[in-house]
Length: 112
Length: 116
Image (cartoon, rainbow over all chains, first blue to last red; front, side, top):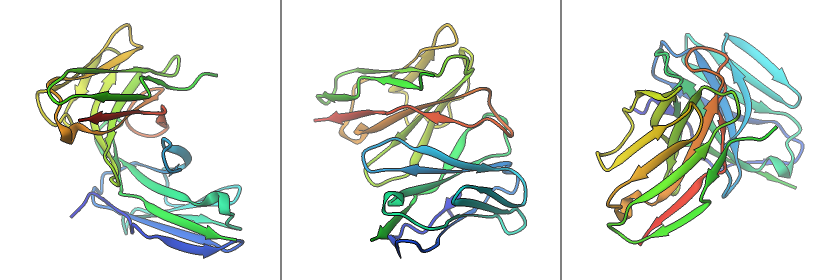
């Protein structure tokens, strides 16, 4: 079992729709959770982080965390073609090294 | 302010040669990380520095890989006797501190290494 799992996609949504990206993790001691966006040929760019159970909203983005289910998701409202990218879920483990474990990423395609 | 910088942006080398990759973190960030991303793959952790020491080297794939950090700032990742499987994008990230909450990592642009 991979430590952080994501559906590779591609996930295709029409412009203006809600895109839902999901991630599960195996380490119950994980404390920090991040979503990065990566455009082709570019480095990862931080979108959101979340540490507590529940929802966290920032503009069109909402991160959701459920530690009991070991599940974290990212919702993108009013999706735009510029949102088309690979979204990486990253999990900070129970150790204090700050080391992040990344999922393989989900490719999102927003069609005009 | 200035972000994480890396050099070179691209490096092409022949199998068996040594290469050095450089990372300059965000000013004031004490923690520095190296990751590797192979074609179509996720990011793979290599090594973490807190100041000049490396408490976690668990991701270095072999003893051909080494890294150092001096002055709590610039870090160099060295790959000796490069192999074709070393071809990847090498990403550096930095954060204020390490571990627990609140230590968001910011990535540099990466060095694309191609071993012929």
